[in-house]
Amino acid sequence: MGGNIVGEHTVQFFGEFETLELKHTSYSRNVFAEGALKAAKFLVNMPNGFYDMEDMCSI
Image 1: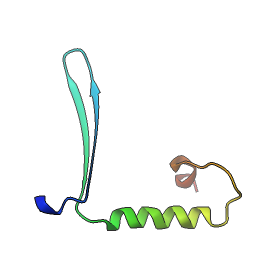
Image 2 (image 1 turned 90 degrees about the vertical axis):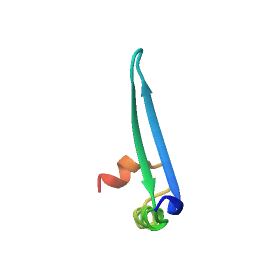
Image 3 (image 1 turned 120 degrees about the horizontal axis):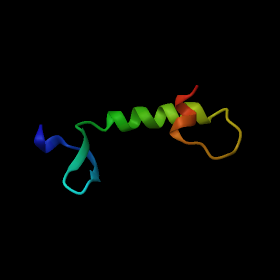
């Protein structure tokens, strides 16, 4: 599967003597397409404005 990575994101939090790392790896672009479709369905009937993921997840 290593050659099939299409997206990888890492967030690191650094302390004085330690590091916490969260990593997401995607092996298919379908996960990104599903997110885009969910966002489009949310936005299609919304008034003009600025929205974030918290808005979309609250409905």
